[in-house]
Image (tube, rainbow, N blue to C red):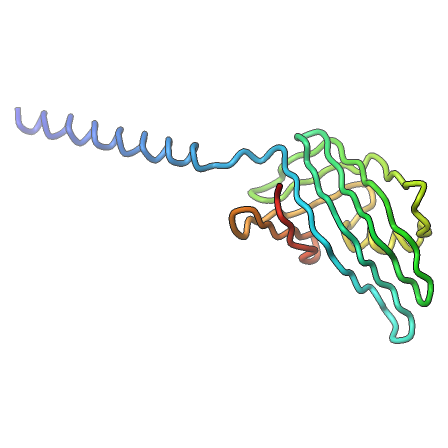
Length: 164
């Protein structure tokens, strides 16, 4: 009889432990969508000593849900001695989580604002830094602290941003 009671007690304790772990995991797991974060970044893509190619931009990354989002890029581009305004929105669709912290979205289109004076060739240099292929955006999103995230592409760390 004591052995039967001990087995039942062990089973109940194991079930309560599993339930406690499950509740803790689900309540502390933050819902990912919508994911919105913003940052200011300076990219120096100069390849040759005498040829300057820099971008000073504010970026706003938004994943509204699995199937829609966008990346706003606003600021200025410096190509040699020429400074131009950069104001573009990269529209994202058909997203999916491809591993623990990596998301991939199709780039549906890039919308150029009427105030944008940056040539497509110069913008494409920045886009190549963010993506491997101009048809999709793949980003790793690593939580650093409460509202700060490290965003990286397939080749390098791109920026940190504040979630809002």
